[in-house]
Image 1 (tube, protein in one colour):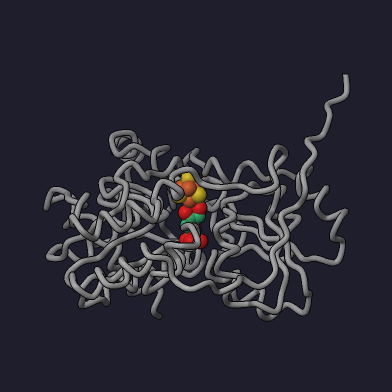
Image 2: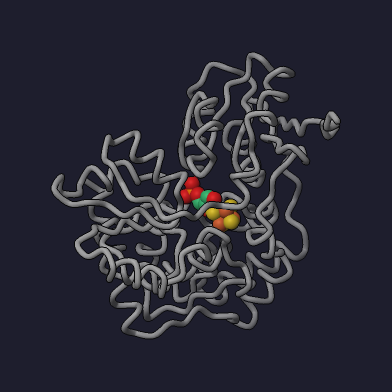
Length: 327
Ligand code: 13P
Ligand code: SF4
């Protein structure tokens, strides 16, 4: 029996048309001023949220912005671990996430009790935690990293320490290859990025043979090996600007293409397809709607809260990351 390949029209995007703000977008802009709130949005958020945000970026950029802001309220449009990071570095501020259910499959793959048990059974490991993890896991870690600074962070770790990288085995494997540091890898992965396959990318490459592929390091190794560049969502902007090609295949969550279209309007972007769809959206990221964003500003709810001892313990490896990645 031969399997039929799923038929789709590739999603091809040129420059984004700038429409005037909608009523709800205007309402959000006014509410931000009234509440002295800063709206931080991840690159995977819907277009309407990105339009009203004060800053749109990757996990690293958002962590820096959260640490620097003097606003009274941080409205974080991303997923739970990102808003939690903002609260850890800003305990005195109100941090609001439009939908508290906006979690992350990768973060869920490393429960804190399992990590604590593993550390106890394997003492002496240097724990590097990808920022996509809970505050309780951060509290058990030596240093945090993002996809944008993971290589730089690992290079700071003393050579004589054995590394345990949690929770993303794909990012960990990529960082290990880039740095030459052997690592124990926690067996977690992002359900979105593992949907990209060699077959799905070969099909799109046949249609656009001149287009380079830029892929997120959360993709599996065989997919990363096909890419012309592997990098964080923020670095994809620089890659798109600098690469001479006019058309680029973007292998990450499809929301990324909003920012690419705004910031690199002269180029055309193709959403990296999976075997079953022309696009690939994170259901958690998409839980934040423009209505929930407006309501979160009106009510200053739902808020991110956590016990003080967890927050204090989690702040140390975050601070170490922020210091090391400035160097
Ligand atoms: P970036 O840090 O590259 O924005 O990635 C975050 C993320 O959740 C990827 O799935
Ligand atoms: Fe988590 Fe993957 Fe969604 Fe990123 S894309 S928030 S890693 S589930």
